[in-house]
Length: 211
Image (cartoon, rainbow, N blue to C red; front, side):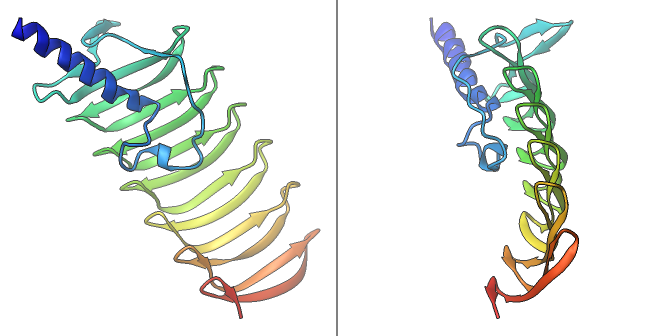
């Protein structure tokens, strides 16, 4: 009886933890902390713990009750939602997820539970929304953001998840609208503004404020 209770507790714990494939807000440094991922799902199912799919055992829980190895989650209609790898309860390696309509929502890499390496986020219509490189959960280097119609909205450099370095902003027609730099998430130095490809003015910023 005690063994049955232990198994049931382990399964319930695993189901609660794996709800993180959504992914969960409560999981530290998960992509749910990134405003670019906004979809929500009310009807979700998961493969049973220790299920065998294509000859591989997935959805495993280790002796400490932590998620381990490959996990797979589906929408209520049985279609694919997301899959990826856990190591000692933390996301590790490549993860991918689709919207309910079958288009990609994200393709990301994780290390010790944090985004690490190249990653892509998408709009529900399938259009690429952002492509970035992450280190320890934060963007690193140039991050390119797109509008839902595919035009570039912004090119921004990041340092450890903080805006730092050059920035270019583009209008809805894809034309350069402004060029400048950030320091610690605030505009800094000279910004140049354009209209129809012609420079219209310059403003100098200091710690986010116009001089």
